[in-house]
Length: 388
Image (cartoon, rainbow, N blue to C red; front, side, top):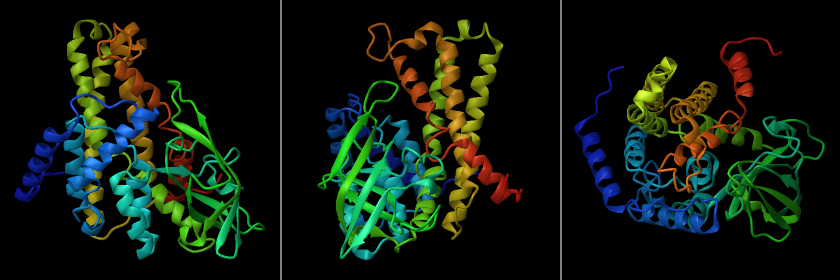
Protein backbone atom coordinates (compact mmCIF):
# COMPACT_ATOMS: atom_id res chain seq x y z
CA UNK A 1 0.00 0.00 0.00
CA UNK A 2 1.44 3.36 -1.08
CA UNK A 3 0.34 5.81 1.61
CA UNK A 4 0.97 9.40 0.59
CA UNK A 5 -0.62 12.47 2.15
CA UNK A 6 -1.87 15.43 0.13
CA UNK A 7 -0.58 18.95 0.87
CA UNK A 8 -3.94 19.71 2.50
CA UNK A 9 -3.64 16.67 4.75
CA UNK A 10 -0.08 17.63 5.72
CA UNK A 11 -1.28 21.15 6.53
CA UNK A 12 -4.06 19.69 8.68
CA UNK A 13 -1.55 17.53 10.56
CA UNK A 14 0.56 20.60 11.34
CA UNK A 15 -2.52 22.46 12.59
CA UNK A 16 -3.45 19.59 14.92
CA UNK A 17 0.11 19.25 16.19
CA UNK A 18 0.36 22.96 16.96
CA UNK A 19 -2.94 22.98 18.87
CA UNK A 20 -1.93 19.92 20.90
CA UNK A 21 1.41 21.46 21.81
CA UNK A 22 -0.39 24.56 23.05
CA UNK A 23 -3.25 22.89 24.92
CA UNK A 24 -2.40 19.37 26.18
CA UNK A 25 -1.99 19.59 29.99
CA UNK A 26 1.66 19.52 31.04
CA UNK A 27 0.75 17.50 34.14
CA UNK A 28 -1.18 14.26 33.45
CA UNK A 29 -4.80 14.28 34.64
CA UNK A 30 -5.87 12.00 37.44
CA UNK A 31 -7.62 8.76 36.49
CA UNK A 32 -11.14 9.34 35.21
CA UNK A 33 -12.19 6.42 37.39
CA UNK A 34 -11.92 8.83 40.34
CA UNK A 35 -14.41 11.64 40.93
CA UNK A 36 -11.73 14.34 40.70
CA UNK A 37 -10.16 12.86 37.59
CA UNK A 38 -13.55 12.44 35.94
CA UNK A 39 -14.24 16.15 36.32
CA UNK A 40 -10.75 17.00 35.01
CA UNK A 41 -11.40 14.91 31.91
CA UNK A 42 -14.83 16.49 31.50
CA UNK A 43 -13.08 19.89 31.42
CA UNK A 44 -10.63 18.56 28.82
CA UNK A 45 -13.59 17.61 26.60
CA UNK A 46 -14.82 21.20 26.96
CA UNK A 47 -11.40 22.53 25.95
CA UNK A 48 -11.36 20.20 22.94
CA UNK A 49 -14.78 21.43 21.87
CA UNK A 50 -13.69 25.07 22.09
CA UNK A 51 -11.12 24.29 19.41
CA UNK A 52 -13.68 22.18 17.48
CA UNK A 53 -11.50 19.11 18.00
CA UNK A 54 -14.00 17.01 19.95
CA UNK A 55 -14.85 14.90 16.90
CA UNK A 56 -13.58 16.31 13.64
CA UNK A 57 -15.84 14.15 11.45
CA UNK A 58 -19.03 15.61 12.92
CA UNK A 59 -21.01 18.27 11.01
CA UNK A 60 -20.02 21.82 11.86
CA UNK A 61 -23.41 22.62 13.43
CA UNK A 62 -22.68 20.05 16.14
CA UNK A 63 -19.17 21.33 16.90
CA UNK A 64 -17.20 19.27 14.39
CA UNK A 65 -15.28 20.14 11.24
CA UNK A 66 -17.09 17.92 8.73
CA UNK A 67 -13.82 16.16 7.83
CA UNK A 68 -13.36 12.70 6.38
CA UNK A 69 -12.04 9.55 8.04
CA UNK A 70 -8.51 9.96 6.68
CA UNK A 71 -8.27 13.32 8.43
CA UNK A 72 -9.68 11.72 11.58
CA UNK A 73 -6.90 9.11 11.47
CA UNK A 74 -4.34 11.90 11.07
CA UNK A 75 -5.90 13.69 14.04
CA UNK A 76 -5.69 10.52 16.16
CA UNK A 77 -2.01 10.07 15.29
CA UNK A 78 -1.22 13.57 16.52
CA UNK A 79 -3.45 13.15 19.57
CA UNK A 80 -1.57 10.07 20.76
CA UNK A 81 1.79 11.56 19.75
CA UNK A 82 1.04 14.48 22.11
CA UNK A 83 0.18 12.08 24.96
CA UNK A 84 -3.19 13.81 25.30
CA UNK A 85 -5.71 12.62 27.94
CA UNK A 86 -7.80 9.51 27.30
CA UNK A 87 -11.31 10.47 26.19
CA UNK A 88 -13.70 10.09 29.12
CA UNK A 89 -16.71 10.38 26.79
CA UNK A 90 -15.52 7.76 24.31
CA UNK A 91 -18.73 5.73 24.66
CA UNK A 92 -20.61 8.80 23.50
CA UNK A 93 -18.42 10.32 20.80
CA UNK A 94 -17.13 7.10 19.25
CA UNK A 95 -20.13 4.76 19.68
CA UNK A 96 -23.42 6.56 20.29
CA UNK A 97 -22.70 9.60 18.11
CA UNK A 98 -22.19 7.70 14.82
CA UNK A 99 -25.27 5.61 15.68
CA UNK A 100 -27.23 8.83 16.19
CA UNK A 101 -26.02 10.10 12.82
CA UNK A 102 -27.51 7.00 11.21
CA UNK A 103 -30.68 6.38 13.24
CA UNK A 104 -31.41 9.53 15.25
CA UNK A 105 -34.00 12.16 14.49
CA UNK A 106 -32.91 15.71 13.79
CA UNK A 107 -34.31 16.72 17.18
CA UNK A 108 -32.28 14.01 18.93
CA UNK A 109 -29.08 15.04 17.17
CA UNK A 110 -29.58 18.71 18.03
CA UNK A 111 -30.40 17.91 21.65
CA UNK A 112 -27.70 15.33 22.37
CA UNK A 113 -24.62 15.95 20.24
CA UNK A 114 -23.70 19.52 21.37
CA UNK A 115 -23.80 18.54 25.06
CA UNK A 116 -21.84 15.39 24.30
CA UNK A 117 -19.20 17.45 22.51
CA UNK A 118 -18.69 19.84 25.43
CA UNK A 119 -18.50 17.06 28.03
CA UNK A 120 -21.59 18.44 29.75
CA UNK A 121 -23.19 15.02 29.26
CA UNK A 122 -21.01 11.92 29.53
CA UNK A 123 -22.41 8.59 28.36
CA UNK A 124 -22.23 5.04 29.67
CA UNK A 125 -23.07 1.87 27.77
CA UNK A 126 -25.85 -0.36 29.12
CA UNK A 127 -25.92 -3.65 27.29
CA UNK A 128 -24.53 -6.44 29.47
CA UNK A 129 -26.76 -8.05 32.08
CA UNK A 130 -26.01 -10.73 34.70
CA UNK A 131 -27.17 -13.45 32.28
CA UNK A 132 -26.49 -11.62 29.02
CA UNK A 133 -22.85 -10.76 28.42
CA UNK A 134 -21.44 -11.58 25.00
CA UNK A 135 -24.83 -13.12 24.20
CA UNK A 136 -26.68 -9.80 24.18
CA UNK A 137 -29.81 -11.38 22.71
CA UNK A 138 -30.40 -13.04 26.10
CA UNK A 139 -31.08 -9.73 27.88
CA UNK A 140 -34.26 -9.58 29.96
CA UNK A 141 -34.51 -6.00 31.28
CA UNK A 142 -37.96 -4.74 30.32
CA UNK A 143 -39.35 -1.44 29.12
CA UNK A 144 -43.16 -1.36 29.06
CA UNK A 145 -44.83 1.48 27.17
CA UNK A 146 -47.37 3.41 29.25
CA UNK A 147 -48.69 6.38 27.32
CA UNK A 148 -45.72 8.53 26.35
CA UNK A 149 -43.30 6.83 28.75
CA UNK A 150 -41.34 3.61 28.93
CA UNK A 151 -41.37 2.06 32.40
CA UNK A 152 -38.05 0.23 32.80
CA UNK A 153 -37.29 -2.59 35.22
CA UNK A 154 -34.23 -4.81 35.37
CA UNK A 155 -30.48 -4.68 35.77
CA UNK A 156 -27.42 -3.84 33.67
CA UNK A 157 -23.85 -4.66 34.67
CA UNK A 158 -20.27 -3.91 33.58
CA UNK A 159 -21.42 -0.46 32.46
CA UNK A 160 -18.24 1.47 31.67
CA UNK A 161 -18.03 5.04 33.10
CA UNK A 162 -21.49 4.65 34.66
CA UNK A 163 -20.36 5.61 38.19
CA UNK A 164 -20.03 9.29 37.27
CA UNK A 165 -21.77 9.44 33.87
CA UNK A 166 -24.93 11.42 33.12
CA UNK A 167 -26.70 9.21 30.57
CA UNK A 168 -26.82 5.58 29.49
CA UNK A 169 -27.65 4.06 26.12
CA UNK A 170 -28.88 0.49 26.10
CA UNK A 171 -31.30 -2.13 24.89
CA UNK A 172 -34.44 -3.19 26.69
CA UNK A 173 -37.10 -5.78 25.92
CA UNK A 174 -40.27 -3.93 24.92
CA UNK A 175 -42.15 -7.04 23.72
CA UNK A 176 -42.58 -9.31 26.78
CA UNK A 177 -43.39 -12.32 24.57
CA UNK A 178 -40.32 -11.95 22.37
CA UNK A 179 -37.18 -14.06 22.42
CA UNK A 180 -33.56 -13.52 21.45
CA UNK A 181 -32.89 -10.51 19.21
CA UNK A 182 -36.54 -9.75 18.50
CA UNK A 183 -38.59 -7.33 20.56
CA UNK A 184 -35.65 -5.22 21.77
CA UNK A 185 -35.63 -1.43 21.69
CA UNK A 186 -32.68 0.99 21.94
CA UNK A 187 -33.40 3.58 24.65
CA UNK A 188 -31.43 6.54 26.04
CA UNK A 189 -31.76 6.82 29.82
CA UNK A 190 -30.80 9.72 32.15
CA UNK A 191 -28.90 8.22 35.08
CA UNK A 192 -30.36 10.72 37.54
CA UNK A 193 -33.91 9.47 36.87
CA UNK A 194 -35.98 8.38 39.86
CA UNK A 195 -35.76 4.63 40.46
CA UNK A 196 -32.16 4.19 39.25
CA UNK A 197 -29.49 2.82 41.59
CA UNK A 198 -25.86 2.84 40.45
CA UNK A 199 -23.51 0.51 42.31
CA UNK A 200 -19.75 0.79 41.54
CA UNK A 201 -17.73 -2.28 40.48
CA UNK A 202 -13.96 -2.07 41.13
CA UNK A 203 -11.50 -2.95 38.37
CA UNK A 204 -8.27 -4.89 38.83
CA UNK A 205 -6.62 -1.67 40.03
CA UNK A 206 -9.34 -1.14 42.64
CA UNK A 207 -10.91 1.92 40.98
CA UNK A 208 -14.63 1.93 40.03
CA UNK A 209 -14.32 1.79 36.26
CA UNK A 210 -17.62 -0.09 35.94
CA UNK A 211 -21.00 -0.15 37.63
CA UNK A 212 -24.10 -2.26 37.87
CA UNK A 213 -27.33 -0.36 37.41
CA UNK A 214 -30.72 -1.28 38.84
CA UNK A 215 -33.97 0.00 37.29
CA UNK A 216 -37.06 0.11 39.49
CA UNK A 217 -40.06 1.51 37.57
CA UNK A 218 -37.88 4.11 35.85
CA UNK A 219 -39.94 6.36 33.59
CA UNK A 220 -38.27 7.49 30.35
CA UNK A 221 -40.05 9.57 27.71
CA UNK A 222 -40.61 7.85 24.37
CA UNK A 223 -38.62 10.63 22.65
CA UNK A 224 -35.52 8.90 24.04
CA UNK A 225 -36.07 5.86 21.84
CA UNK A 226 -33.42 5.58 19.12
CA UNK A 227 -34.82 3.89 16.02
CA UNK A 228 -38.18 2.19 15.92
CA UNK A 229 -39.89 0.06 18.55
CA UNK A 230 -38.46 -3.47 18.39
CA UNK A 231 -35.57 -2.37 16.16
CA UNK A 232 -33.00 -2.24 18.96
CA UNK A 233 -30.97 -5.17 17.71
CA UNK A 234 -30.39 -3.54 14.32
CA UNK A 235 -29.40 -0.24 15.95
CA UNK A 236 -27.13 -1.96 18.49
CA UNK A 237 -25.36 -3.97 15.79
CA UNK A 238 -24.45 -0.69 14.08
CA UNK A 239 -23.03 0.55 17.39
CA UNK A 240 -21.13 -2.72 17.87
CA UNK A 241 -19.65 -2.33 14.39
CA UNK A 242 -18.23 1.07 15.36
CA UNK A 243 -16.90 -0.42 18.62
CA UNK A 244 -15.18 -3.39 16.99
CA UNK A 245 -14.20 -1.72 13.77
CA UNK A 246 -12.87 1.77 13.15
CA UNK A 247 -13.82 4.31 15.77
CA UNK A 248 -13.25 3.16 19.36
CA UNK A 249 -9.68 1.85 18.93
CA UNK A 250 -7.84 3.89 16.34
CA UNK A 251 -4.51 2.43 15.15
CA UNK A 252 -2.66 5.42 16.60
CA UNK A 253 -3.29 4.01 20.07
CA UNK A 254 -1.36 0.84 19.24
CA UNK A 255 1.30 2.57 17.16
CA UNK A 256 2.12 4.76 20.14
CA UNK A 257 2.33 1.72 22.44
CA UNK A 258 4.61 -0.01 19.91
CA UNK A 259 6.85 3.07 19.76
CA UNK A 260 7.11 3.16 23.55
CA UNK A 261 7.84 -0.57 23.58
CA UNK A 262 10.77 -0.08 21.21
CA UNK A 263 12.12 2.69 23.48
CA UNK A 264 11.72 0.43 26.51
CA UNK A 265 13.63 -2.35 24.76
CA UNK A 266 16.49 0.00 23.79
CA UNK A 267 16.72 1.34 27.36
CA UNK A 268 16.96 -2.21 28.73
CA UNK A 269 18.63 -3.95 25.80
CA UNK A 270 21.46 -5.56 27.73
CA UNK A 271 19.15 -7.49 30.03
CA UNK A 272 16.38 -7.95 27.43
CA UNK A 273 18.75 -9.62 24.94
CA UNK A 274 19.39 -12.42 27.41
CA UNK A 275 16.12 -13.80 26.05
CA UNK A 276 16.26 -13.72 22.20
CA UNK A 277 12.47 -14.07 22.07
CA UNK A 278 12.02 -10.58 23.49
CA UNK A 279 13.69 -8.81 20.57
CA UNK A 280 11.58 -10.85 18.15
CA UNK A 281 8.40 -9.93 20.07
CA UNK A 282 9.27 -6.22 19.96
CA UNK A 283 9.84 -6.33 16.20
CA UNK A 284 6.65 -8.29 15.67
CA UNK A 285 4.64 -5.80 17.76
CA UNK A 286 5.94 -2.84 15.77
CA UNK A 287 5.19 -4.49 12.43
CA UNK A 288 1.70 -5.54 13.50
CA UNK A 289 0.83 -2.07 14.75
CA UNK A 290 1.90 -0.62 11.39
CA UNK A 291 -0.03 -3.33 9.51
CA UNK A 292 -3.17 -2.52 11.49
CA UNK A 293 -2.75 1.17 10.66
CA UNK A 294 -2.44 0.48 6.94
CA UNK A 295 -5.46 -1.82 7.00
CA UNK A 296 -7.48 0.86 8.79
CA UNK A 297 -6.48 3.48 6.21
CA UNK A 298 -7.68 1.07 3.53
CA UNK A 299 -11.01 0.66 5.33
CA UNK A 300 -11.34 4.43 5.77
CA UNK A 301 -10.80 4.96 2.05
CA UNK A 302 -13.54 2.44 1.28
CA UNK A 303 -15.94 4.12 3.73
CA UNK A 304 -15.15 7.56 2.26
CA UNK A 305 -16.29 6.16 -1.07
CA UNK A 306 -19.63 5.03 0.34
CA UNK A 307 -18.75 1.54 1.56
CA UNK A 308 -19.90 -0.07 4.81
CA UNK A 309 -18.25 -1.82 7.75
CA UNK A 310 -19.42 -5.43 7.67
CA UNK A 311 -18.59 -8.57 9.64
CA UNK A 312 -14.89 -7.95 8.95
CA UNK A 313 -15.04 -5.62 11.94
CA UNK A 314 -14.76 -8.83 13.98
CA UNK A 315 -11.32 -9.50 12.50
CA UNK A 316 -10.26 -5.98 13.53
CA UNK A 317 -11.47 -6.53 17.07
CA UNK A 318 -9.56 -9.79 17.47
CA UNK A 319 -6.40 -8.28 15.98
CA UNK A 320 -6.17 -5.11 18.07
CA UNK A 321 -7.21 -6.74 21.34
CA UNK A 322 -4.65 -9.55 21.06
CA UNK A 323 -1.97 -7.16 19.80
CA UNK A 324 -2.52 -4.98 22.86
CA UNK A 325 -2.09 -7.99 25.13
CA UNK A 326 1.07 -9.13 23.34
CA UNK A 327 2.73 -5.71 23.48
CA UNK A 328 2.11 -5.28 27.20
CA UNK A 329 3.17 -8.85 27.97
CA UNK A 330 6.45 -8.13 26.15
CA UNK A 331 6.93 -4.99 28.22
CA UNK A 332 6.40 -7.05 31.39
CA UNK A 333 9.11 -9.45 30.21
CA UNK A 334 11.55 -6.60 29.57
CA UNK A 335 10.95 -5.03 32.97
CA UNK A 336 11.13 -8.24 34.96
CA UNK A 337 10.35 -7.77 38.66
CA UNK A 338 10.03 -3.98 38.19
CA UNK A 339 6.88 -4.61 36.13
CA UNK A 340 4.98 -5.30 39.34
CA UNK A 341 5.50 -1.77 40.70
CA UNK A 342 2.36 0.35 40.89
CA UNK A 343 2.54 3.80 39.23
CA UNK A 344 2.68 5.63 42.58
CA UNK A 345 5.54 3.50 43.99
CA UNK A 346 8.64 5.59 44.71
CA UNK A 347 10.88 3.23 42.72
CA UNK A 348 8.50 2.92 39.75
CA UNK A 349 10.13 5.74 37.73
CA UNK A 350 7.37 5.64 35.14
CA UNK A 351 7.25 1.88 34.58
CA UNK A 352 3.93 1.64 36.43
CA UNK A 353 2.21 2.92 33.31
CA UNK A 354 3.05 -0.40 31.69
CA UNK A 355 1.38 -2.31 34.53
CA UNK A 356 -1.78 -0.23 34.12
CA UNK A 357 -1.77 -1.00 30.41
CA UNK A 358 -1.14 -4.69 31.00
CA UNK A 359 -4.06 -4.99 33.41
CA UNK A 360 -6.41 -3.13 31.07
CA UNK A 361 -5.29 -5.16 28.05
CA UNK A 362 -6.66 -8.31 29.69
CA UNK A 363 -10.17 -6.98 29.15
CA UNK A 364 -9.65 -6.42 25.42
CA UNK A 365 -10.65 -9.93 24.29
CA UNK A 366 -13.82 -9.63 26.41
CA UNK A 367 -15.42 -6.21 25.84
CA UNK A 368 -17.06 -5.33 22.51
CA UNK A 369 -18.03 -9.01 22.28
CA UNK A 370 -15.64 -11.76 23.32
CA UNK A 371 -13.10 -12.91 20.77
CA UNK A 372 -14.68 -16.36 20.84
CA UNK A 373 -17.94 -14.81 19.63
CA UNK A 374 -16.04 -12.80 16.99
CA UNK A 375 -14.49 -16.01 15.64
CA UNK A 376 -17.97 -17.51 15.34
CA UNK A 377 -19.08 -14.43 13.37
CA UNK A 378 -16.08 -14.73 11.04
CA UNK A 379 -16.74 -18.44 10.50
CA UNK A 380 -20.44 -18.02 9.76
CA UNK A 381 -20.72 -14.64 8.00
CA UNK A 382 -17.36 -14.30 6.24
CA UNK A 383 -16.37 -17.90 5.54
CA UNK A 384 -19.89 -19.33 5.13
CA UNK A 385 -19.26 -22.18 7.53
CA UNK A 386 -22.24 -23.98 9.12
CA UNK A 387 -23.38 -22.94 12.58
CA UNK A 388 -21.92 -25.25 15.23
